[in-house]
Every structure is written in structure tokens, then in C-alpha cells.
Length: 184
Image 1: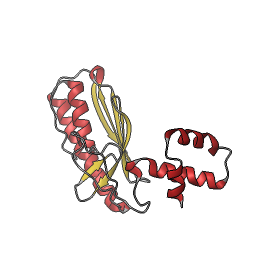
Image 2: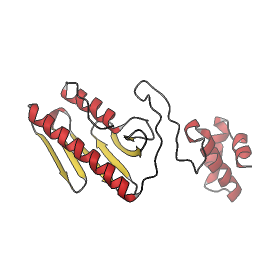
Image 3: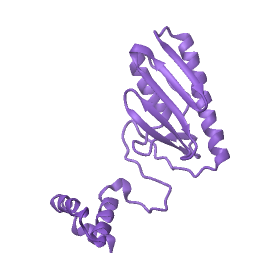
Image 4: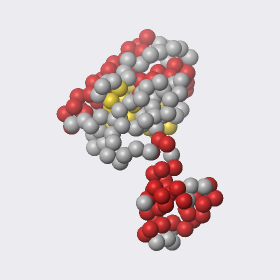
């Protein structure tokens, strides 16, 4: 029934009118609005019980990732491994390159990377309650990354891009050199 109601309001004009009505609407209209939002975007057309999200393909996001259900121990294992690998790589990179005001610090699950004048500050941290890694980038802003066990990758559900790919691209652009971050 929800899908039928949502289809009735599928046109853009009807959608705007419906959004205006929702705040003062009956419970049935609110249900229709919820159904419309759930069916409006192809990205959201999936079962609410599914843990797989089909991602739009583009040249920078060739993979379709599956959000895995991680136990607490497995989450800490893979997130700690990713953060430590990233920290070691960035420390070695800083030692090899002469970057003014370059600094990296990893404490209590929070990695702070300062690229100085060239690239701003990145903050990458573990989020155990959500079993995610969160990134705050001076270029692309904040994003959350889930883990795909089969591919061994931390990926963004919105863009489909892996954490390593995004960091590699942005740091390369900021520093003017090509780097490949050793995490997925």
C-alpha cells in the first residue's frame, strides 16, 4: 500500500505539495511521505533488512562494496590494523618529504594529520559504537566508512570510494606528488 501511495505523489509538483502538508498531516499522509522518500532514490530501493547497498558506478568508484556485520572484536582488529598501517605510512612519508608544518599524531584511536599550508588538517578516528572509521577532510569534508570483510576495505556508502583511495587522491593533490595509501 505504501508504494502505491508513494507512486501517486511521484511527480515533482505533487512531491513539493506533499512535503508542505506533512507537518500538519494525518498519520496516513506521514506514512505516504515516508514511503515516497524510501522509493524516490534508486540508491534507497532495497529491503530495510539488507546489509548490501548498490552503489552508483563511476570511474573513481569501480567497486560495489557490501557492508559487513562485524562483531566487536573483529571491528577492533580491522580498525586498529587500518589505523596503525595508515599511521606508519604517513610517518614514513613525512620523514621522506620536506613539508613545512607536517605533523602526524595517533592517540586513543584518533589520527590527526597536518599537511601544513599545502593541505590543511585531516582527522581520522575509530567509531566503535557504529563500527565505522570517520574522516574529516579539509577538502571533501566529513565522511563515514564501513568495512567490507570480503574485500578487506573501508568504504563510504554514499560515494562507494574506499578510504585509501580518497586519502591517496587528496594527499597527492595537496602535495603535488603521486602517493598510494596502503589501506583499502
